[in-house]
Length: 135
Image (cartoon, rainbow, N blue to C red; front, top):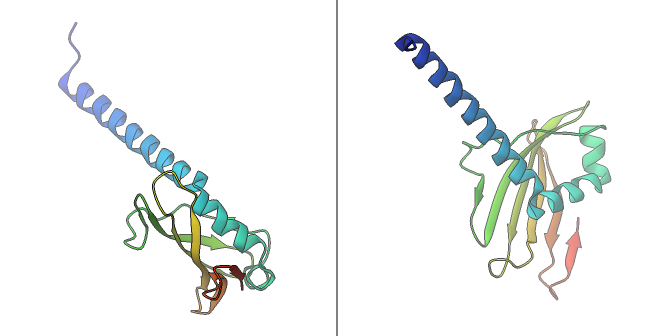
């Protein structure tokens, strides 16, 4: 016995919605496992001023995939990671690059911008002798 058209449309809609939700989750998971993302979070977790401003425990939220600031290609990555704590919330801005595909990612700049507009620099490489400077 053939399935009614309305039921077919409904099931197709459910399948499409489920597929989109799974794809969104997988993209978020891929970003959160990337080394440029993990390196930036390490900088945040090791910076006392940022931890004091946000409060602990920290919550790291999903990226806004439609935000034009978020950009990743073969050699450059820029992310705006939403973070919050009991005291405040804001965005962790990350800029990272690498010399060639499959090479190691190097942080270029990481700073926290709180919702009140205050910016807390967490990382910037020193220009003197290519050493890393932790703010």
